[in-house]
Image 1 (cartoon, rainbow, N blue to C red):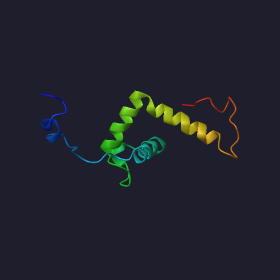
Image 2 (image 1 turned 90 degrees about the vertical axis):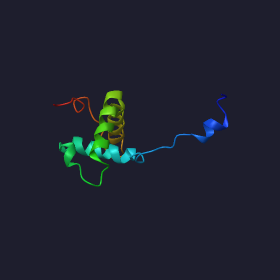
Image 3 (image 1 turned 135 degrees about the vertical axis):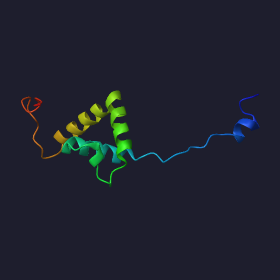
Image 4 (image 1 turned 120 degrees about the vertical axis):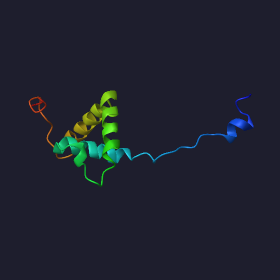
Length: 95
């Protein structure tokens, strides 16, 4: 059967389930959890569902996206007008 037949156009799959969560809101939730140190189960209600945020967190962490976002945010924060340029001593991470 040809790929462009009437049969294939009649039975296209429809998207099911919930609409995708807003990536910005998910990122804000991830940053909130990292900043506050709270557990995912205590994520405030104005963020997307905790399961969605945690799944995106794991996915982005494993793929390296979260590290890229942190680097961009740190660069943007230090290059903002009125902010002093950090010295090399300021960039040493303290754990």
